[in-house]
Amino acid sequence: MRAHELLGWSTLLAAALHVGLSLGVDHRVVEHLKLTAPRYEYAGMLAFLTLLFLTMPAGTRVRSRLWPRHRTFQATHVGAACLLVVALALHVITTRRYVAGRAHSVAYVLLSSIVLLALLRARVRRGVPQPPSGFVGALVFGRHSRLMLAIVLGAAGTLLLLLRGGTALALREPFVRRSEPLVLGFPHDRHRQVNCIQCHHNFVDRTGTDSCISCHRSGRADIRVGAEARFHDFCLGCHRDPPAGLSGHGPVTGCSTCHTPL
Picture: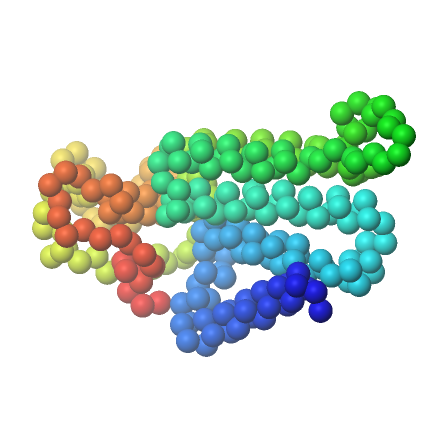
């Protein structure tokens, strides 16, 4: 068995063991598989499945059965690679756990775009050189060249959309809204250093007298849109970039940090 084939089967086995142990040990993992999970989590799962797809059929025997023509295999492989780059960007940029800040996001998008453009390789011509029939004709994908060029440019354009603020906010929303919000165990005693009106702005403008969630879930349309994502941005943003003078703060690393056990 070749090294890349062994790597593919090892990756699949490790993934199966991880998912099996996670479901058996921590029942909260199921919450991340429901449609009520944020959309960026599904982007991360799509990236993982795409990575498996790129790894598993790398063996010569499997590849020859699935793709008799080498050009078709190349086109499929590069198309899946474009999907992988985009799905990773959707997950990484939207979570803001790995890439935080506008400058870092722009750098990540530029680097990912360079990776996509690097997939457009020129055809190697052996023997007597023949003049290429334009840029598309010089690509290695043969009759799939136009399609592959469109896929690569479309993927690069999708990456640019991630730099818009509204895109990230939409990806942090779930596909299906929960009928009842998750219970929030907010420790007020650990946030004594923070001014109350930092969170409870209704003390100032008197727009509501109930909890944050009840107001934002049933209030005006402009505060209902993206409510869940806005709450996460507010809490995570304060922990990552705390106001001057605060001490003892720590990063939020998991759902159970704020939410009581599901």
